[in-house]
Image (cartoon, rainbow, N blue to C red):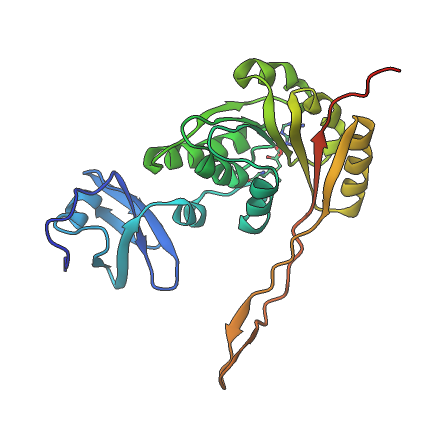
Length: 274
Ligand SMILES: C[S@@+](CC[C@H](N)C(=O)[O-])C[C@H]1O[C@@H](n2cnc3c(N)ncnc32)[C@H](O)[C@@H]1O
């Protein structure tokens, strides 16, 4: 039952949140929709009379209606390729200085895990280019991005290039000029480092996402060969804590998973010949 009265009209997209954090994105339009985990219903009929912040019952589930935002989008995203998650996205964004108005390249786009985190901070003045060579991955990634664009307060100028990152440098340069940052998440980042670094402004940064040590070493050598300066090489370690049954808090029993080594390098001015 609705508890808030006289609240603002619903936005097009809302999230229905279970108490444990699971959430379902719902497009508030008329006509029957099917949402995995919730079943079939007409969203506009279901939500009629309710407001953001209300508790609502759908089938046996008791849910809170909240604004659709990045955490809910991430939990609901369609997945095909392995995605870059919060732990690594957050660090890359902060270290590389990506924010409102940034010009950023990311590839491979995959399921748009990283791209959604980037889009979330770049504002409507930002320019984001994604590159993906496999059409079936591009379809999944662009679906996730389009849905996010529908509910985001601000969304960057986003362009998806369905092509090989090895051939993308000149096209990328024509879209938003010199880049502030490029993040490479493909199996062999070192192959594209030299060309992609040409698209960066002086002071811009390139990052390689390297699940294995061999990828890290090859990428490290490649950025140095391209004249870039390595600023960070390492990994983010996440250790969650939980409440113990007999009181107190302690590190949880979940194993600490490795995701990838991150390599971040900056483009500096060339030395003048003496
Ligand atoms: C691990 S996934 C990327 C995941 C993505 N960063 C995310 O966070 O969801 C790697 C993607 O790179 C794509 N890929 C691999 N080599 C590529 C290349 N040379 N050019 C463009 N895309 C490539 C693959 O098809 C795959 O979708």
